[in-house]
Length: 584
Image (cartoon, rainbow, N blue to C red; front, side, top):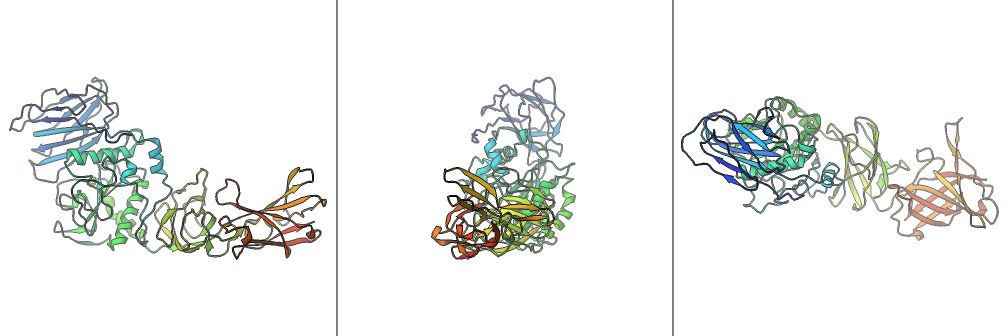
């Protein structure tokens, strides 16, 4: 994707508003003879002679009244769409410049507009380029998010960076020096760009908004600090990181953070995915800055007494933003954000094999227990494992303050099975679960390179081992045999006695566990069967199964006839949960 390939069609119309303007699309500028008098318009046709995938139209004009600018489009110049009204950003008095942005159909070739008395009308046809499938997948399924700040009570939700959404300026703008502010008020906007995106390409919409702010409004960067699309994806807006001063609140931006809901919410309301993400990004900032979202305070930059969580229209400018349908939701939004900021409910994590201990190892399988962890039960069915399952996510922040998302095997209201990613530092770590409603559960674990645990056949960490037997005969032939059997009367697995066979047979036990693969060497592994040392031949990954380890050991013939015995294992001086097998 060449995101720098932005086409601008600047049609500078002063007064000849009844004429037909024909323009090329590649940076062509048509500027009829300027006059000073404001004129009333009729329908004006702007045929686009070369097909380009224009996805947005930005407009700026000097208004003489509040009459809106209306646009309609056509593919063939014969059949026209309904008239669409540009929701304009008119923060000043009449006679000052007004601007608006609207999304177009990708195949548009003809455009007509109509407006009341106006002059100095400029139209920008914006082509943000298509977002690659790879980039869209990365945005939808980000596997990790690393943050350097100290862990707040409410964590920052995943945010798509400027680089990831394809900002032509890159992650950091080279334009005038950045300014920063102490955020005291949270401001909600809507983009007023419509509620659909061509090919569901919302990053392209973000690029269109950036383009509109840069080249139609003449700003140094996109105005909003964050944007939220209808899928609930949060995008980084203005360059500069946390607390950078934006351009979104009628020229009095100090003390604010602006979040734009992408869409037009004059009649429609945002869906629950988008509202959930809005609540989460606002809860993070409110918690970080100690903002009472249900309170009211003086906004220093404007001198107004504002709700600490306000809409754009609450500022000094004349605007209906964030829309007549979204604005009434701010009251319940304040309540929802405040509810997210309550202390997290407790979360306990243990090895998914042993179900004991508070020490877990990177690259191991872990089970977490708590309340309201997920809306319902769901298993991860993709490879790689998802980091968002049924709306639930989990993060692990280690002692070096590195935070990653944990891949999820399974989620349910009371239990989550997850994988601890590699590369985390040893020591205490904080595990945070966020459910689909944004509620948190949190607990502390200890990370260590090795934390041995063995899987039991009954999935309870005790009793019969989850294991198989490998038999190698004198002629080199191999066969696998069961080490357990189902007992219907007991409603559980029980040991199946292992036949050691002829003296020439080599019989191996293959047991399964987790938290073992990062051991310091086989000389640091010890195993015993019924108190008899058993030679350990391999400890490490078990095929391609995520987080699953296996232990291969030879069964000594001195165990012949011992019956049910204990299987014990230590790795790097740490003891795994003891299990049982049976020897015939």
